[in-house]
Image (cartoon, rainbow, N blue to C red; front, side, top):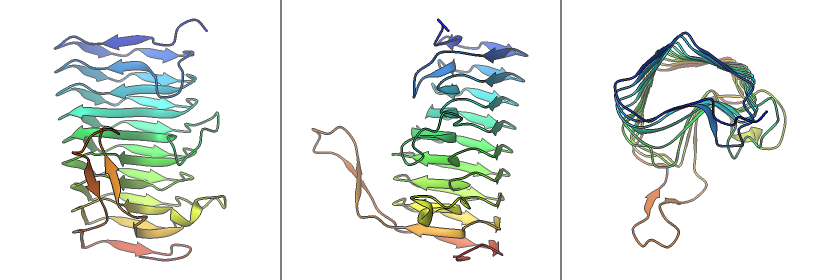
Length: 250
C-alpha cells in the first residue's frame, strides 16, 4: 500500500521478462509498471490489481510483448511516445473502480503519440473502451487484434489522425445501456482525420462502424495560438464486414 510505482524504466536497451507486478497504490493516470527510455523490451510480464493503471508504454522505440494487464482500478495500459510497439498483449477486466469512461478508463488509451503500433493484441471485458487513440496521435496502427465484450467501443480513434485500423475483429462491444452509450461501436471514429479502416469485422456490437462529429476539437496548450484542429474528414473505408449489430451496421 506504500508503493505507487513498482518499476520505472528510464534507461536504454533494457530487457525485462517473467515478472509479476501486483497491488500498487498508484493514483489515476499513473501506471505501476512504466516503460520509458528507449529501445527497451518488456516480455511475458503481468500487471494486475493496481489502483490506477497497470502499465504504460512510452519513450521511443520500446516494445511491450505478451504483457498481460488485468483487473486494474482504472486502465490496463497507457500509451504515448514515438515508434513504440505493443504486441500480443492481453488487457482484461480493467476499470474495476468505475472511473468515468468518457474521461479515461478501460483497456488502453494512447495520447500524443507518433507511429504507435498495436498488433495481435486482445481487449476483453473491460469497463470502458478497448483500444483507444485519443488526442493528437499521428501515424498510429492497430491490426490483427481482438476487442470483445467491452462496455465502451472496441476500437476508438478520437481527436487524432491519420490512424490505420485493419484486419481486426470487434464483437459485442458497447451493449451496456447507460449514459453515453449512443456513441459506442465496434469501431468508432470521433473527430479523427484521414483514417483508413479496412478488412475489419464488426459483429454484434451496439453499432458496427461509426463516424461521430461533435464539432471542431482542438489539441495543444491552452494559451497557444498553434493548436491543431481535428474534425471528421478524409476517411477511407474498404472491405469491412459489419453484421448483426444492435442498432446500425454503419
